[in-house]
Length: 374
Image (cartoon, rainbow, N blue to C red; front, side):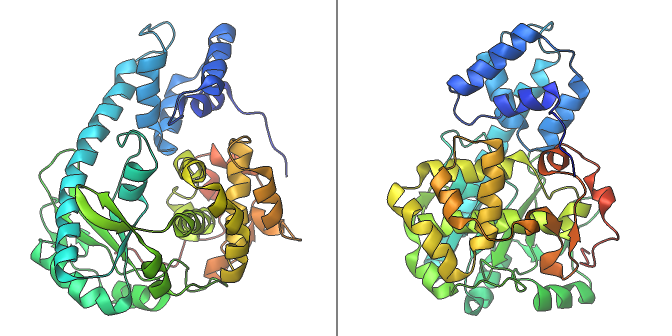
């Protein structure tokens, strides 16, 4: 397995995908301007989209580079993505605030995961990160109440019709598969005429771990530790700092190694590694010191090492060396494997950085995923 040198477009993207502009990003961009290597700008734009960092890149390009077509063509495309995402996230915050308010009124115990929590508590600018849905952790006993709340607000489980004006129920086999194999309820959708959003989506999760995972944690205990915060303009609850970091790393591992995610091209992107990096940044030293033992107690040390190790490859100064070292397993061979959670383990031929910037990595898969999606 070999690793190639990154293309200049990928190097520039890593520099510009910075939630907080600092000397490292500035130095990298100035070196690029001085060298002026030949650039494939269509490739750069495609990577900014695939890596889900175009909003971040758009803001930084406008603020940090002169509007000179000789330097970067079509700058407006990137700035428009940032501005559109600001509008989109505002719309999502308003809608998700209604849901959180309704959950509070009904007395449902919950903790918001990922999107809104990261945008509000981790990133200084909520427009930097594109949200897709409202992820909420609940216990299974709360599903009926939560489902009724969502139905009252116009949500249904299924897929959008071709016209995008209604939700078509899932086939029976899909409903059965999800109930048996996955730790989430089927997504709840609501169509909207908002052109920036098109649909609102709510994902109800019953466990931080996947069903085939070796680790486990009691959901009740996670909800007991949830911290009161204000999200989407409403008093609500987010995961505790340790659980939030654990959740992000577990999710990153699941997506990076799942047949379905790989086949759909959403297994690897810079945005997820930035989520981990930025969450590490806002996590107290006391909690970081507790993390290795906490991970071992829950049986999540392999997943955490996977996430932190790969994040450190991209951002060497962002992850404490001692933290990665304490989690390092005896056998690191699994770092280049996929399909473990589906019982179909395979091994990548390409190295991590090659895969990250290769949109055709899915072609290595021996077959399509068995997870039905309709």
